[in-house]
Length: 505
Image (cartoon, rainbow, N blue to C red; front, side, top):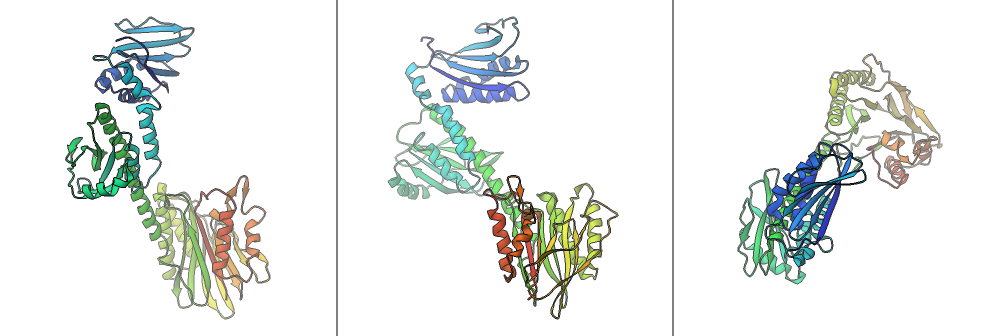
Protein backbone atom coordinates (compact mmCIF):
# COMPACT_ATOMS: atom_id res chain seq x y z
CA UNK A 1 0.00 0.00 0.00
CA UNK A 2 1.15 3.52 -0.68
CA UNK A 3 1.14 6.33 1.84
CA UNK A 4 -0.97 8.66 -0.27
CA UNK A 5 -3.19 10.99 1.73
CA UNK A 6 -6.81 9.88 1.35
CA UNK A 7 -8.77 11.85 3.94
CA UNK A 8 -8.37 14.42 6.71
CA UNK A 9 -10.66 15.17 9.65
CA UNK A 10 -9.78 17.98 12.06
CA UNK A 11 -11.21 19.79 15.08
CA UNK A 12 -10.05 22.53 17.45
CA UNK A 13 -9.97 22.29 21.25
CA UNK A 14 -8.93 24.30 24.29
CA UNK A 15 -6.39 22.95 26.80
CA UNK A 16 -7.88 22.11 30.17
CA UNK A 17 -9.67 19.43 32.15
CA UNK A 18 -12.10 18.59 29.35
CA UNK A 19 -9.54 18.45 26.54
CA UNK A 20 -8.61 14.78 26.83
CA UNK A 21 -12.15 13.35 26.96
CA UNK A 22 -13.24 15.62 24.11
CA UNK A 23 -10.33 14.55 21.92
CA UNK A 24 -10.93 10.88 22.75
CA UNK A 25 -14.57 11.30 21.75
CA UNK A 26 -13.50 12.98 18.49
CA UNK A 27 -11.05 10.15 17.83
CA UNK A 28 -13.82 7.58 18.33
CA UNK A 29 -15.99 9.37 15.78
CA UNK A 30 -13.13 9.63 13.27
CA UNK A 31 -12.35 5.92 13.43
CA UNK A 32 -16.05 5.13 13.21
CA UNK A 33 -16.27 7.19 10.04
CA UNK A 34 -13.23 5.38 8.60
CA UNK A 35 -14.44 1.90 9.69
CA UNK A 36 -11.30 1.34 11.77
CA UNK A 37 -13.01 0.55 15.06
CA UNK A 38 -10.53 -2.21 15.90
CA UNK A 39 -7.94 0.53 16.46
CA UNK A 40 -10.02 2.83 18.64
CA UNK A 41 -8.35 2.00 21.95
CA UNK A 42 -4.83 2.38 20.56
CA UNK A 43 -5.76 5.59 18.76
CA UNK A 44 -7.39 7.09 21.85
CA UNK A 45 -4.35 6.18 23.97
CA UNK A 46 -1.99 7.88 21.51
CA UNK A 47 -4.28 10.93 21.30
CA UNK A 48 -4.40 11.19 25.09
CA UNK A 49 -0.59 11.08 25.30
CA UNK A 50 -0.18 13.85 22.75
CA UNK A 51 -2.91 16.08 24.17
CA UNK A 52 -1.68 15.67 27.75
CA UNK A 53 1.57 17.37 26.65
CA UNK A 54 -0.27 20.53 25.55
CA UNK A 55 0.43 23.08 28.33
CA UNK A 56 -2.04 25.91 27.74
CA UNK A 57 -4.03 27.64 25.03
CA UNK A 58 -5.86 26.23 22.04
CA UNK A 59 -4.75 23.46 19.74
CA UNK A 60 -5.91 21.59 16.67
CA UNK A 61 -6.19 17.82 16.28
CA UNK A 62 -5.92 16.44 12.74
CA UNK A 63 -6.39 12.81 11.78
CA UNK A 64 -4.92 11.86 8.38
CA UNK A 65 -5.83 8.67 6.53
CA UNK A 66 -2.87 7.56 4.39
CA UNK A 67 -4.28 4.32 3.03
CA UNK A 68 -2.02 1.95 4.99
CA UNK A 69 -1.74 4.05 8.14
CA UNK A 70 -3.39 6.73 10.25
CA UNK A 71 -1.53 9.78 11.49
CA UNK A 72 -2.62 12.10 14.29
CA UNK A 73 -1.24 15.61 14.54
CA UNK A 74 -1.70 17.90 17.54
CA UNK A 75 -0.77 21.44 16.51
CA UNK A 76 0.05 23.98 19.25
CA UNK A 77 0.30 27.67 18.46
CA UNK A 78 3.07 29.94 19.68
CA UNK A 79 4.97 27.39 21.80
CA UNK A 80 8.71 27.41 22.42
CA UNK A 81 10.69 24.59 20.87
CA UNK A 82 11.48 21.55 22.98
CA UNK A 83 13.00 18.13 22.44
CA UNK A 84 11.04 15.81 20.16
CA UNK A 85 9.34 12.70 21.47
CA UNK A 86 11.86 9.86 21.27
CA UNK A 87 9.80 6.91 20.07
CA UNK A 88 9.24 5.02 16.79
CA UNK A 89 6.61 6.59 14.52
CA UNK A 90 6.39 9.62 16.77
CA UNK A 91 7.78 13.06 16.21
CA UNK A 92 7.66 16.80 16.70
CA UNK A 93 7.91 19.32 13.88
CA UNK A 94 8.10 23.12 14.00
CA UNK A 95 6.96 25.95 11.77
CA UNK A 96 7.94 29.29 13.23
CA UNK A 97 6.60 29.26 16.77
CA UNK A 98 3.98 26.61 15.98
CA UNK A 99 4.72 23.13 17.29
CA UNK A 100 3.08 19.97 15.96
CA UNK A 101 3.33 16.67 17.77
CA UNK A 102 2.43 13.69 15.65
CA UNK A 103 2.19 9.93 15.75
CA UNK A 104 1.52 7.25 13.13
CA UNK A 105 -0.35 3.97 13.48
CA UNK A 106 -0.32 1.24 10.87
CA UNK A 107 -3.69 -0.06 9.71
CA UNK A 108 -4.11 -3.86 9.91
CA UNK A 109 -3.73 -5.01 6.30
CA UNK A 110 -4.25 -1.47 5.00
CA UNK A 111 -7.49 -0.14 3.47
CA UNK A 112 -8.12 0.22 -0.24
CA UNK A 113 -7.93 3.80 -1.46
CA UNK A 114 -11.23 3.45 -3.31
CA UNK A 115 -12.94 2.26 -0.13
CA UNK A 116 -11.60 5.18 1.89
CA UNK A 117 -12.69 7.65 -0.77
CA UNK A 118 -16.19 6.16 -0.82
CA UNK A 119 -16.54 6.34 2.94
CA UNK A 120 -15.45 9.95 3.30
CA UNK A 121 -17.07 11.33 0.14
CA UNK A 122 -19.62 14.10 0.68
CA UNK A 123 -20.39 14.76 4.32
CA UNK A 124 -19.05 11.30 5.29
CA UNK A 125 -20.13 9.11 8.15
CA UNK A 126 -18.84 11.55 10.72
CA UNK A 127 -21.06 14.24 9.23
CA UNK A 128 -23.93 11.76 9.13
CA UNK A 129 -23.62 11.09 12.87
CA UNK A 130 -23.33 14.81 13.60
CA UNK A 131 -26.44 15.57 11.52
CA UNK A 132 -28.31 12.69 13.18
CA UNK A 133 -27.42 14.06 16.63
CA UNK A 134 -28.67 17.52 15.64
CA UNK A 135 -31.97 16.10 14.37
CA UNK A 136 -32.49 14.03 17.51
CA UNK A 137 -31.73 17.03 19.70
CA UNK A 138 -34.31 19.08 17.80
CA UNK A 139 -37.35 17.60 19.53
CA UNK A 140 -38.34 16.89 23.11
CA UNK A 141 -41.57 15.17 22.12
CA UNK A 142 -41.19 11.44 22.94
CA UNK A 143 -43.79 10.53 20.30
CA UNK A 144 -41.70 12.21 17.59
CA UNK A 145 -38.37 10.58 18.41
CA UNK A 146 -39.18 7.13 16.87
CA UNK A 147 -40.21 8.81 13.60
CA UNK A 148 -36.99 10.82 13.50
CA UNK A 149 -34.91 7.72 14.22
CA UNK A 150 -36.50 5.80 11.35
CA UNK A 151 -36.14 8.61 8.85
CA UNK A 152 -32.49 9.16 9.79
CA UNK A 153 -31.66 5.51 9.16
CA UNK A 154 -33.57 4.99 5.89
CA UNK A 155 -32.15 4.78 3.26
CA UNK A 156 -28.60 5.60 4.43
CA UNK A 157 -28.10 2.47 6.53
CA UNK A 158 -31.03 0.21 5.70
CA UNK A 159 -34.01 -0.32 3.41
CA UNK A 160 -36.40 -0.02 6.32
CA UNK A 161 -36.44 0.72 10.01
CA UNK A 162 -38.90 -0.18 12.76
CA UNK A 163 -38.68 1.39 16.20
CA UNK A 164 -40.15 -0.41 19.20
CA UNK A 165 -40.58 1.25 22.58
CA UNK A 166 -41.22 0.01 26.11
CA UNK A 167 -43.28 2.06 28.53
CA UNK A 168 -41.17 0.87 31.45
CA UNK A 169 -37.67 -0.59 31.79
CA UNK A 170 -37.87 -4.25 30.86
CA UNK A 171 -41.52 -3.95 29.82
CA UNK A 172 -43.02 -5.42 26.63
CA UNK A 173 -42.00 -3.85 23.34
CA UNK A 174 -44.64 -2.07 21.27
CA UNK A 175 -44.20 -1.13 17.62
CA UNK A 176 -44.03 2.69 17.61
CA UNK A 177 -43.01 3.58 14.05
CA UNK A 178 -42.17 1.90 10.73
CA UNK A 179 -40.52 3.52 7.71
CA UNK A 180 -39.65 1.91 4.36
CA UNK A 181 -37.61 3.47 1.55
CA UNK A 182 -40.53 2.52 -0.70
CA UNK A 183 -43.43 4.25 1.08
CA UNK A 184 -45.97 2.02 -0.69
CA UNK A 185 -44.56 -0.98 1.21
CA UNK A 186 -44.68 0.59 4.67
CA UNK A 187 -48.19 -0.63 5.57
CA UNK A 188 -47.46 -4.20 4.51
CA UNK A 189 -44.22 -4.20 6.47
CA UNK A 190 -46.00 -2.84 9.55
CA UNK A 191 -48.61 -5.60 9.32
CA UNK A 192 -45.85 -8.21 9.08
CA UNK A 193 -43.92 -6.79 12.02
CA UNK A 194 -47.08 -6.58 14.12
CA UNK A 195 -47.19 -10.39 14.05
CA UNK A 196 -43.64 -10.78 15.36
CA UNK A 197 -42.47 -10.78 18.94
CA UNK A 198 -39.23 -8.86 19.16
CA UNK A 199 -36.65 -9.99 21.72
CA UNK A 200 -35.69 -7.61 24.50
CA UNK A 201 -31.96 -8.19 23.98
CA UNK A 202 -29.16 -6.29 25.66
CA UNK A 203 -26.84 -6.51 22.63
CA UNK A 204 -27.28 -6.18 18.85
CA UNK A 205 -28.79 -9.37 17.44
CA UNK A 206 -30.00 -10.82 14.18
CA UNK A 207 -33.78 -10.94 13.83
CA UNK A 208 -36.00 -13.38 11.96
CA UNK A 209 -37.93 -11.23 9.49
CA UNK A 210 -38.92 -13.15 6.36
CA UNK A 211 -37.09 -12.08 3.20
CA UNK A 212 -34.76 -9.65 4.97
CA UNK A 213 -31.42 -9.44 6.62
CA UNK A 214 -32.56 -7.81 9.87
CA UNK A 215 -30.68 -6.56 12.90
CA UNK A 216 -32.01 -5.32 16.22
CA UNK A 217 -30.13 -2.71 18.23
CA UNK A 218 -31.32 -2.14 21.81
CA UNK A 219 -32.15 1.42 22.79
CA UNK A 220 -30.59 1.63 26.24
CA UNK A 221 -29.84 4.85 28.13
CA UNK A 222 -28.73 5.40 31.73
CA UNK A 223 -29.07 1.68 32.41
CA UNK A 224 -32.70 1.55 31.25
CA UNK A 225 -33.85 -0.40 28.21
CA UNK A 226 -36.26 1.89 26.37
CA UNK A 227 -36.86 -0.02 23.16
CA UNK A 228 -35.36 -1.54 20.02
CA UNK A 229 -34.20 -0.13 16.68
CA UNK A 230 -34.75 -2.77 14.00
CA UNK A 231 -33.03 -2.39 10.59
CA UNK A 232 -33.63 -4.43 7.45
CA UNK A 233 -31.94 -4.71 4.06
CA UNK A 234 -31.77 -7.29 1.24
CA UNK A 235 -27.99 -7.81 1.39
CA UNK A 236 -25.71 -8.37 4.38
CA UNK A 237 -24.87 -5.51 6.69
CA UNK A 238 -21.29 -4.27 6.14
CA UNK A 239 -19.25 -4.09 9.32
CA UNK A 240 -19.05 -0.30 9.19
CA UNK A 241 -22.85 -0.06 8.94
CA UNK A 242 -23.22 -2.29 11.98
CA UNK A 243 -20.78 -0.11 13.89
CA UNK A 244 -22.52 3.08 12.83
CA UNK A 245 -25.94 1.68 13.69
CA UNK A 246 -24.71 0.66 17.13
CA UNK A 247 -23.29 4.13 17.73
CA UNK A 248 -26.49 5.71 16.41
CA UNK A 249 -28.66 3.51 18.64
CA UNK A 250 -26.93 4.92 21.72
CA UNK A 251 -27.59 8.47 20.55
CA UNK A 252 -31.21 7.59 19.74
CA UNK A 253 -31.72 6.02 23.14
CA UNK A 254 -30.37 9.09 24.90
CA UNK A 255 -32.62 11.36 22.83
CA UNK A 256 -35.65 9.21 23.65
CA UNK A 257 -34.79 9.16 27.34
CA UNK A 258 -34.30 12.94 27.41
CA UNK A 259 -37.63 13.48 25.66
CA UNK A 260 -39.42 11.21 28.12
CA UNK A 261 -37.85 12.90 31.13
CA UNK A 262 -38.78 16.29 29.69
CA UNK A 263 -42.39 15.20 29.09
CA UNK A 264 -42.66 13.75 32.59
CA UNK A 265 -41.28 16.93 34.14
CA UNK A 266 -43.63 19.10 32.08
CA UNK A 267 -46.61 16.96 33.14
CA UNK A 268 -45.54 17.17 36.79
CA UNK A 269 -45.15 20.95 36.48
CA UNK A 270 -48.63 21.31 35.02
CA UNK A 271 -50.14 19.14 37.76
CA UNK A 272 -48.33 21.13 40.46
CA UNK A 273 -49.39 24.43 38.91
CA UNK A 274 -53.03 23.31 38.81
CA UNK A 275 -52.83 22.37 42.49
CA UNK A 276 -51.78 25.94 43.32
CA UNK A 277 -54.76 27.56 41.57
CA UNK A 278 -58.51 27.27 42.14
CA UNK A 279 -60.05 24.19 40.56
CA UNK A 280 -62.30 26.41 38.46
CA UNK A 281 -62.88 30.10 38.01
CA UNK A 282 -64.94 31.23 41.02
CA UNK A 283 -68.36 32.82 40.51
CA UNK A 284 -69.45 35.35 43.12
CA UNK A 285 -73.17 36.15 43.31
CA UNK A 286 -73.69 39.89 42.80
CA UNK A 287 -70.16 40.37 41.39
CA UNK A 288 -68.88 40.35 37.83
CA UNK A 289 -65.37 38.85 38.00
CA UNK A 290 -62.77 37.36 35.66
CA UNK A 291 -59.27 35.92 36.04
CA UNK A 292 -56.61 35.01 33.48
CA UNK A 293 -53.46 33.06 34.25
CA UNK A 294 -50.78 32.20 31.66
CA UNK A 295 -47.45 30.58 32.58
CA UNK A 296 -44.45 31.62 30.51
CA UNK A 297 -42.25 29.31 28.47
CA UNK A 298 -42.77 26.18 26.40
CA UNK A 299 -42.21 23.86 29.34
CA UNK A 300 -44.88 25.56 31.46
CA UNK A 301 -42.42 25.45 34.35
CA UNK A 302 -44.13 26.01 37.66
CA UNK A 303 -44.34 29.76 38.02
CA UNK A 304 -44.60 32.09 40.96
CA UNK A 305 -47.78 33.93 39.92
CA UNK A 306 -51.09 32.92 41.50
CA UNK A 307 -54.61 34.18 42.14
CA UNK A 308 -57.52 33.18 44.35
CA UNK A 309 -61.13 34.20 44.96
CA UNK A 310 -63.01 32.36 47.70
CA UNK A 311 -65.98 32.80 50.10
CA UNK A 312 -65.43 33.63 53.78
CA UNK A 313 -69.01 33.98 54.98
CA UNK A 314 -72.41 34.89 53.62
CA UNK A 315 -71.95 37.89 51.32
CA UNK A 316 -68.22 38.19 52.12
CA UNK A 317 -65.42 37.04 49.81
CA UNK A 318 -61.64 37.30 49.77
CA UNK A 319 -59.41 37.67 46.73
CA UNK A 320 -55.66 37.59 46.15
CA UNK A 321 -53.25 38.00 43.30
CA UNK A 322 -49.56 37.49 43.99
CA UNK A 323 -46.14 36.94 42.50
CA UNK A 324 -43.40 34.88 44.14
CA UNK A 325 -39.83 35.67 43.12
CA UNK A 326 -38.51 33.04 40.71
CA UNK A 327 -39.93 29.82 39.31
CA UNK A 328 -39.63 26.11 39.96
CA UNK A 329 -40.15 24.05 43.14
CA UNK A 330 -38.89 26.74 45.54
CA UNK A 331 -41.33 29.31 44.17
CA UNK A 332 -44.10 26.72 44.16
CA UNK A 333 -43.51 26.01 47.85
CA UNK A 334 -44.03 29.68 48.73
CA UNK A 335 -47.04 29.90 46.39
CA UNK A 336 -48.66 26.94 48.13
CA UNK A 337 -47.85 28.38 51.54
CA UNK A 338 -49.36 31.75 50.60
CA UNK A 339 -52.57 30.38 49.09
CA UNK A 340 -53.33 28.01 51.96
CA UNK A 341 -52.39 30.55 54.64
CA UNK A 342 -54.70 33.17 53.11
CA UNK A 343 -57.64 30.78 53.04
CA UNK A 344 -57.07 29.25 56.47
CA UNK A 345 -56.63 32.54 58.36
CA UNK A 346 -59.48 34.27 56.51
CA UNK A 347 -61.89 31.52 57.52
CA UNK A 348 -60.68 31.75 61.10
CA UNK A 349 -61.79 35.37 61.19
CA UNK A 350 -58.52 37.26 60.75
CA UNK A 351 -58.80 40.61 59.00
CA UNK A 352 -57.03 41.37 55.74
CA UNK A 353 -54.07 43.20 57.33
CA UNK A 354 -53.63 40.55 60.02
CA UNK A 355 -53.60 37.78 57.41
CA UNK A 356 -50.92 39.56 55.38
CA UNK A 357 -48.80 40.13 58.50
CA UNK A 358 -48.98 36.47 59.53
CA UNK A 359 -48.16 35.36 55.99
CA UNK A 360 -45.07 37.60 56.10
CA UNK A 361 -43.92 35.84 59.28
CA UNK A 362 -44.66 32.39 57.81
CA UNK A 363 -42.50 33.12 54.75
CA UNK A 364 -39.65 34.40 56.91
CA UNK A 365 -39.81 31.22 59.01
CA UNK A 366 -39.03 29.23 55.86
CA UNK A 367 -35.44 30.43 56.27
CA UNK A 368 -33.12 29.86 53.33
CA UNK A 369 -35.98 28.38 51.28
CA UNK A 370 -37.97 31.61 51.51
CA UNK A 371 -38.71 33.74 48.47
CA UNK A 372 -40.07 37.24 48.68
CA UNK A 373 -43.65 37.72 47.58
CA UNK A 374 -45.68 40.63 46.28
CA UNK A 375 -49.37 40.42 47.07
CA UNK A 376 -52.64 42.23 46.49
CA UNK A 377 -55.12 40.87 49.06
CA UNK A 378 -58.60 42.12 49.76
CA UNK A 379 -62.02 41.39 51.22
CA UNK A 380 -65.24 42.03 49.29
CA UNK A 381 -68.47 42.73 51.11
CA UNK A 382 -71.55 42.82 48.93
CA UNK A 383 -73.41 45.99 49.87
CA UNK A 384 -76.51 47.76 48.60
CA UNK A 385 -75.45 49.91 45.68
CA UNK A 386 -71.96 48.49 45.20
CA UNK A 387 -69.01 46.66 46.73
CA UNK A 388 -67.17 47.54 49.93
CA UNK A 389 -63.52 46.38 49.68
CA UNK A 390 -60.76 46.30 52.30
CA UNK A 391 -57.41 46.08 50.53
CA UNK A 392 -53.66 45.61 51.22
CA UNK A 393 -51.06 46.07 48.45
CA UNK A 394 -47.83 44.48 49.68
CA UNK A 395 -45.10 45.48 47.23
CA UNK A 396 -47.39 44.61 44.33
CA UNK A 397 -48.01 46.49 41.07
CA UNK A 398 -50.58 49.17 41.84
CA UNK A 399 -54.27 48.29 41.72
CA UNK A 400 -56.36 50.49 39.43
CA UNK A 401 -60.01 51.55 39.58
CA UNK A 402 -61.88 52.49 36.41
CA UNK A 403 -64.91 54.78 36.78
CA UNK A 404 -67.80 54.70 34.25
CA UNK A 405 -66.68 58.18 33.22
CA UNK A 406 -63.37 56.74 31.97
CA UNK A 407 -61.31 58.11 34.85
CA UNK A 408 -58.63 55.68 36.09
CA UNK A 409 -57.09 56.10 39.53
CA UNK A 410 -54.71 54.20 41.77
CA UNK A 411 -56.18 52.62 44.86
CA UNK A 412 -54.31 51.28 47.92
CA UNK A 413 -51.00 52.74 49.00
CA UNK A 414 -47.90 50.56 48.43
CA UNK A 415 -46.72 48.69 51.52
CA UNK A 416 -43.78 46.35 52.22
CA UNK A 417 -43.41 43.22 50.15
CA UNK A 418 -43.48 39.94 52.07
CA UNK A 419 -40.61 37.73 53.19
CA UNK A 420 -38.05 40.52 53.68
CA UNK A 421 -38.75 42.61 56.80
CA UNK A 422 -39.76 40.88 60.07
CA UNK A 423 -40.91 44.19 61.57
CA UNK A 424 -43.23 45.09 58.67
CA UNK A 425 -46.72 46.26 59.67
CA UNK A 426 -49.71 46.31 57.34
CA UNK A 427 -52.90 48.33 57.20
CA UNK A 428 -56.02 47.68 55.15
CA UNK A 429 -57.51 50.53 53.15
CA UNK A 430 -61.14 51.02 52.18
CA UNK A 431 -62.07 51.04 48.50
CA UNK A 432 -65.64 51.53 47.24
CA UNK A 433 -66.80 50.19 43.89
CA UNK A 434 -70.02 51.79 42.74
CA UNK A 435 -72.14 50.50 39.85
CA UNK A 436 -69.97 50.01 36.77
CA UNK A 437 -66.71 50.57 38.63
CA UNK A 438 -63.88 48.14 37.77
CA UNK A 439 -60.97 47.08 39.98
CA UNK A 440 -57.94 45.70 38.12
CA UNK A 441 -55.07 43.77 39.68
CA UNK A 442 -52.18 42.33 37.64
CA UNK A 443 -48.74 40.79 38.18
CA UNK A 444 -45.56 42.23 36.73
CA UNK A 445 -45.87 39.92 33.75
CA UNK A 446 -48.26 42.63 32.55
CA UNK A 447 -46.64 45.84 33.76
CA UNK A 448 -43.10 44.79 32.86
CA UNK A 449 -43.84 43.30 29.44
CA UNK A 450 -40.89 44.50 27.40
CA UNK A 451 -40.42 45.62 23.80
CA UNK A 452 -36.81 46.67 23.43
CA UNK A 453 -36.14 49.35 26.06
CA UNK A 454 -39.86 50.08 26.63
CA UNK A 455 -42.17 48.53 29.22
CA UNK A 456 -45.92 48.26 28.76
CA UNK A 457 -46.56 50.36 31.86
CA UNK A 458 -44.21 53.18 30.88
CA UNK A 459 -46.03 56.53 30.91
CA UNK A 460 -49.01 54.91 32.72
CA UNK A 461 -49.52 52.50 29.84
CA UNK A 462 -51.70 50.11 31.85
CA UNK A 463 -53.97 52.92 33.07
CA UNK A 464 -54.43 54.11 29.49
CA UNK A 465 -55.39 50.59 28.41
CA UNK A 466 -57.90 50.33 31.25
CA UNK A 467 -59.43 53.70 30.34
CA UNK A 468 -60.47 52.17 27.01
CA UNK A 469 -62.52 49.50 28.79
CA UNK A 470 -65.53 51.56 29.93
CA UNK A 471 -68.78 49.59 29.80
CA UNK A 472 -66.97 46.28 29.15
CA UNK A 473 -67.67 43.19 31.23
CA UNK A 474 -65.01 41.88 33.61
CA UNK A 475 -64.16 39.10 31.13
CA UNK A 476 -63.84 41.58 28.26
CA UNK A 477 -61.55 43.82 30.33
CA UNK A 478 -59.30 40.88 31.24
CA UNK A 479 -59.11 39.75 27.60
CA UNK A 480 -58.33 43.28 26.41
CA UNK A 481 -55.38 43.47 28.83
CA UNK A 482 -54.16 40.00 27.86
CA UNK A 483 -54.22 40.83 24.13
CA UNK A 484 -52.39 44.08 24.75
CA UNK A 485 -49.63 42.19 26.58
CA UNK A 486 -49.41 39.67 23.76
CA UNK A 487 -49.28 42.31 21.03
CA UNK A 488 -46.84 44.61 22.81
CA UNK A 489 -43.79 42.70 21.52
CA UNK A 490 -43.29 40.09 18.78
CA UNK A 491 -41.42 37.61 20.98
CA UNK A 492 -43.22 35.46 23.59
CA UNK A 493 -43.36 36.79 27.12
CA UNK A 494 -40.61 35.57 29.45
CA UNK A 495 -42.72 36.05 32.59
CA UNK A 496 -45.89 34.55 33.97
CA UNK A 497 -49.04 36.61 33.70
CA UNK A 498 -52.03 36.89 36.05
CA UNK A 499 -54.96 39.28 35.71
CA UNK A 500 -57.83 39.73 38.17
CA UNK A 501 -60.82 41.95 37.33
CA UNK A 502 -63.69 42.79 39.71
CA UNK A 503 -66.66 44.82 38.44
CA UNK A 504 -69.60 46.11 40.40
CA UNK A 505 -72.82 45.44 38.43
